Length: 362
Image (cartoon, rainbow, N blue to C red; front, side, top):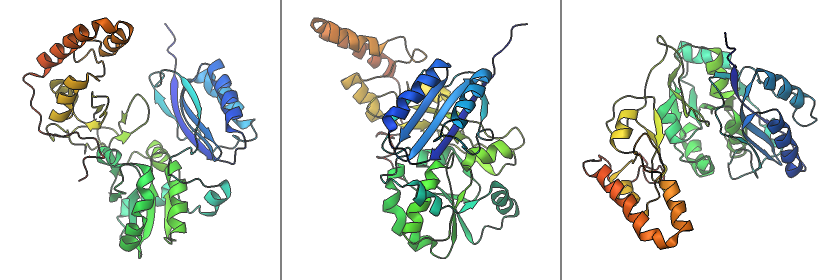
């Protein structure tokens, strides 16, 4: 019987002061590529953030590497945040220098992060949700709106941000709304809340807690129905199912039909690229475009992503062919437009304009 490799997806981070991120990126990239890992790692002066996939042998090697490194040792929750997968979820291994390991628009030192620590354990959080004793608390989802719409904890309210960098603009609003409440913030892995807690406390919201380990630690520990919907993740899966037949609840609504779904796609127009909650059937029916506007712009600009499950045209290769043979530009563009026109002739959209979130705020 052929042995089937077992793969694991792991997300972790560590806030630590790093003097030379460029050096550590090169060192990290060489090691991870040498052992065959795939994923995305950011290293900056404030620490490291990582999402990677690996097989059983690579797990052992990488954990030893981290534990024996003066900066990366003693990373918490390595095992409890791990999720089994059916293979690699990234096309390659990337390790990049990033000014911030999670983009908030502000950098904080390790000392500032540790000073603001006010963590609520997943056990305490579960008890609050199970008993319904949340009257004195605000459960604040610090993720972006499309992530919240796909899935969130019971009783949670959205931070109502389209990007994490908008958080600072919302703080006065939070202070006005939540001044007499204890605020429990959560995010996917916990990393956003590490920084947002500092910002909230510096702004005067002292009764601020962060869910220790984030959503991933909670759902990997408990299958209790306290999470509604799917979890938006930052790898090829995009939408991760949470729970089973007894505990899973679908709350996402299809952008085309408003029927319930856990599925996610991207608008096929490159300049839009809106993250869409939609059924696969409706996505195919609408040829991958989120709106009438994007369908029109696709025919004008031809900046369409290739998807052979939608049509047989390789739009990327055609654009490269125009660059290589500019004398054929008119002929190739005409071929692409005719293809799109034929595909879109009978398609109707219930949204006139792009559903990219900076345009659509509910």
